[in-house]
Length: 430
Image (cartoon, rainbow, N blue to C red; front, side, top):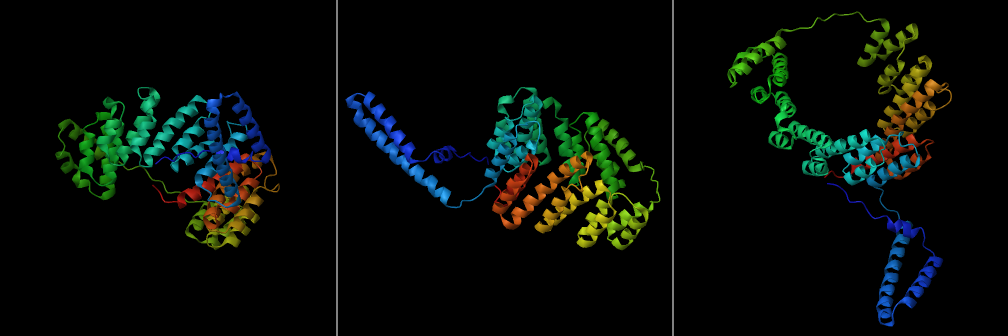
């Protein structure tokens, strides 16, 4: 369900509360009263008095709110992320797509629509229309998604959005609803194909073939190949004739037998290559044999040590960090520190995650322009994960202070997104 946006006028009132403002309001009221006929002054006086009472109550409420802690919501944090990006004055930069998508994913559809207006490029604006409808449909609100695109019905943009919604309905099993939503009934192959794939995944092969018979032969061929693959994977090659016998169209049944048989008999050539020592080391890391891995790394000076370090960190954090710092080149070191920061955050070890992040962004790691760009890009992902995991662990207040302290707009925005994700996932889903 979409959330209504609260009024922000109270904030503005609170910023101007003072004795001088009250006296100024009284002076304006006196001037206004003098211009009224006597018969209306009594009514105006009563209205003015009521207004002052209401203003006083509003001011008292603002002062109380400022003097007492109140809950921090995911909606508030996402709005701050939008404002942070907008203040940067570079609409073409920053994780604005992710802010928009997060607002939509967490059900703040009006906020997401407002964020979409900040995009400057026509392609971006059109993408927002389709993406917002898609996410709302994925959230289960099909009627709401269709209402959002109603004003575009009949246009290419509206057709694209409705087709996206229809595909989601088909993937969820609502074929009649999907066909009704589909804007071009004469071109329903895409919807039917998605539904047939759902049937194949659910082992309803007869149903998938009946769905395929409603398509043209080109689209149906994809279903026939995939049914053949399913028969091979399930070891049910002998069901081919039996399945074909249940089809109502002899032409389609013949095409199915031909294409499915190809899927059953075709086997790509498989060549077994002997891995080099570093390749074997990567395999050893995957299966957890880090003693053998470390020995090869030391002897062969293998690249991609960050991959091995991440695997090792889960069971031997100190050994993983030692191996990374000892053997990684600058690029691998940046990638590794980023991934270790993420791994530590997911384990709830926030101090260690922050230490890795600080090292990632230190001059020793980003010693040249190439690595600086790499470290910044990878650092955004680490900041995002740290903020989310830290909020889940300790709540939003301390994390928001850290988010505000980040040195660049992208990091501040990514940190706010992480906080909002944690808060949004913590509240009951509607």
